[in-house]
Length: 450
Image (cartoon, rainbow, N blue to C red; front, side, top):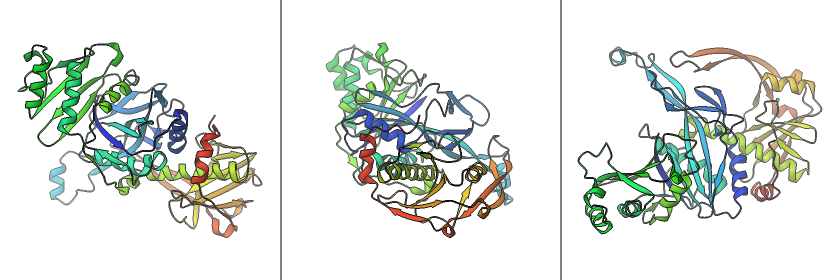
């Protein structure tokens, strides 16, 4: 697998590794696999929720991806916290004779959008406030996706998006890395297939470091690959791509899981050899996050965190996040069953309930609460609390939902859905500063998910 590397700086610096790990786990939550082609929720790959993902091409006709991730979860090593973030992405599949059909005006009929899963390997150095993101570049917009996720999602709980900057590699950065790897006994230079016209510099210099240094500094364009000679960096290869305009570092691995222990060691080398000469502001595009449902999933997490903080610190009740157990509610608090509905801005007039949520509400009316969280991404969310809900006031409808479970055939399934006009329920309105309690949440080391 070939990964490009994006580097971001300006994040908050932390002293407690476990606090950082808890933040990532709480704010992102685990990814939930809906089918082998799509996620029900974006989030972190965790062994209990996402045992496998489609990330490695296996040669099938439509580019199916798969690799077993086994017992993976958030990992730590030295000053690094490593996690895999997974999200849905829409991929357009064109039927045969597409070019001819376009001429007949049938473009949209014969173009089908399917779900695919994309993953980012994220390595955060919490003491220096630097984030490395490894991603597979399949399209021109892949890097823009990474930038948007980092700025709008990751920076929300690890820093301030107005202070986050992107590190642009320079020729001097790659020269430093080339000289480090070339002079290290733990790495050896090898010829890259993509650079047939490039001399094998190390062999030509006959392993004389001074000559190697001179050649590196005089060449304007070349590709250099380095493979480790020790098990310390097993299953990893580093490629430095020198060009007239762009300078890139790529990481190759054939065994993703076994290389996780050594990826932070390689990134530590890269970090120590960076000059940070070119650090720039970068843009994000919320339309990408909305299109793929990333922002919606994150709004849900922020709403649940607001509910947990309200129960734990405002009401002094012991709260627990059970949103991934699909019991018909999201938070359990001293016997109360709390379903959380989160909105980025103003909530809709009606809220949607699943059949499972409606049945639990009917059976446990006195214990079932609904928290409608508006302005969920702000520092001051508003909770509209509804209790003692009469199930007879819930409107029943049948809707069709499309599933892209088969590559080229879209399936439709009819399901029961229920709507509650919540403003008619005289909700209790609560408003508080969430940022005042987030650090308390992690200092108490509350483990909501069992």
